[in-house]
Image (cartoon, rainbow, N blue to C red; front, top):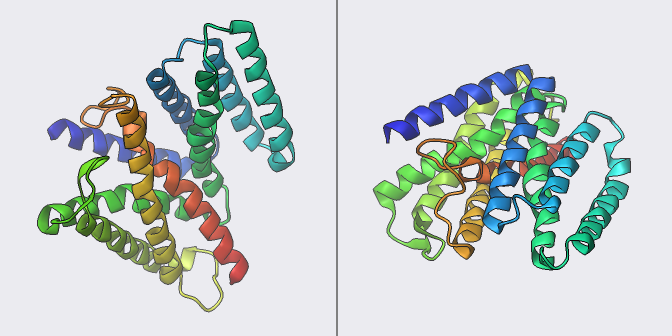
Length: 271
């Protein structure tokens, strides 16, 4: 428990530094987390030492470099086509040592880890992103805390007994409500520093965004758990004492970050 607490505090300090400075600092941190997360996933799929895994790392770096340019969307589709074709060429050259299903794991890991994680950086470069980026943690780690407290004190009905035996519906509800509360409080405190949302108060917008991201956050956690159970793996790694690997700690962030990004874009357009 002590190791878990210390590790959690260290992660919050790292997040504060990366979120505060943004720019190349956050860019480097998100890229580093993406590469480590992909390595952990490749290790579960038993392809971490294959040429396909190397292409996955190179593709991730290339994608992140493209994020530095404003017209990244224009080149995303051609990039993905070239990436898949190179993977298939590598499959032909390594056949039959590497199986087709293992090759298919590479673009899956690329999108699941690298692309979804990149939305943390993409949120930070939005107008007001220096504040909105914190909603990612409120909707993931914050909701996790409330879900744990609600589950311990009121949890009686198992929600997903196969994937997560300790998760209850009461805990899930507590996590979402807690995230809404945290988001509303955050929006109220920083209302004067957030972009205008028409006649709707900032605390309402941020609360709704936080609640929506908290719902998806649970499925991010369950997705990572399902992959582990599919491959009889307890943890993705031992990098973070008390937590496991990068994927064990950031699984919910992978779902929360794009949710926050697109909801913020949607609210800005509607208001």
